[in-house]
Image 1 (tube, rainbow, N blue to C red):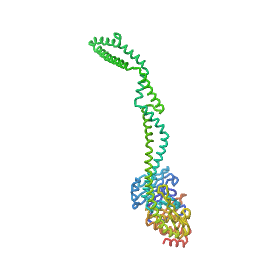
Image 2: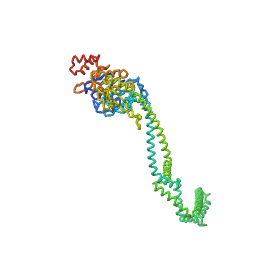
Image 3: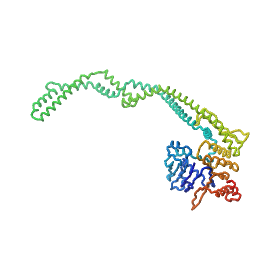
Image 4: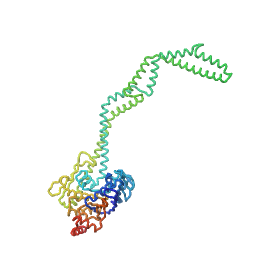
Length: 550
């Protein structure tokens, strides 16, 4: 329940703090006094969007803080799911900074607006005049029945399966589209893959072939120059080897004279060994230099295949071509496997549909049972509100399509008078009838919703006199199970509250502020008398007010 509300620098409110009691509280005040400002401030701590224009002093921040007692409402799991610190006495604070930024805190922990709205749904139901029209909304009617049917677990199970079902359908649609695309490309992809596979490409092969091609295409030039190297090196008496051996022999004779000559002898010895090795390798290479036109053609053809493939696939290396080959193979194989994947998904969709239909049938049955209970309870209350001939019926029609609540189409039918045909409530209920019906619904839901607090903002629109008294009595009965606030202009309702708060304006030094106060017994008499007769309070109005209060 709402224990207190602190507001600073919001709209016409400079600063106020008000404590609230349990049971049935009344809030009155002239039009424009600031009752809607209170609701607006409360809406901010419940997660409504902030507006910089709502700051009274644009240079100062706005603070709204609400204290809630949540001890008896089993909200620990909700706090845990929102990753919030639980406290039996929970404090929600909202700040709007002059920069326009907004901050929110639950028990001093920062929260975002989505988390605040989720928590707010379990703390207060603020019922405005506009929300009375909710009763004509099919989704609201479904929610009513599900609360009475205690269908929460059934709905969650259904929604979980529906999510899976839609995921299967989405995947199937994607795979079918992919099959169509792959089908158009399959023949070409297969051709490209087989062409690459036929090339039998190997990593490093291109470099080896290019080197071999260079040799084969210059075979005569290579032979000529290697032969010259061998000839120059091996000529008797004047050849390179003969001369080097002569040099070595001369240095050997003087090597013992000094270390310098010995070093030169060693160096020429090493050089001679290296030269002999080079000449031997040239002779070996010369033996391998064979003019082989068929091999030349084979190498050049293989290289041309590689170059053509690189150009076709815009690749720079055999490694890239092999990666393209692997990708093409995956596409080709995927197309071959895609039909089995489609069959698997179709089977999953069929199984999921059976589960959904079964769960939807359970939901429909529970709604049908709940509708009879709900209608009996509403009828009993609406009779007290001056509509003894009112009739209701929930028209529940199973459909072929799924929605997030099952497979039902629901329409609340209504007739105010005997002999009148039941029609959709949105077509036949007047404003005053809507108010009474909505109050009856809220009274029934008191046993099912387990909300700590409800605020009725002029739910008495369109009614007066004895009916207003009956509405007040129903709200008072509701307050035995929850905290109830009624914002009203009717003295009949105002007189039934356990506590009475008045909202009023104060003008001082050319500045207007809104304030709220808890009325004493004597002040209540005056306030209700004023509601009865206006500013000029008569003696009869005072007596009437006392009679209403008693």
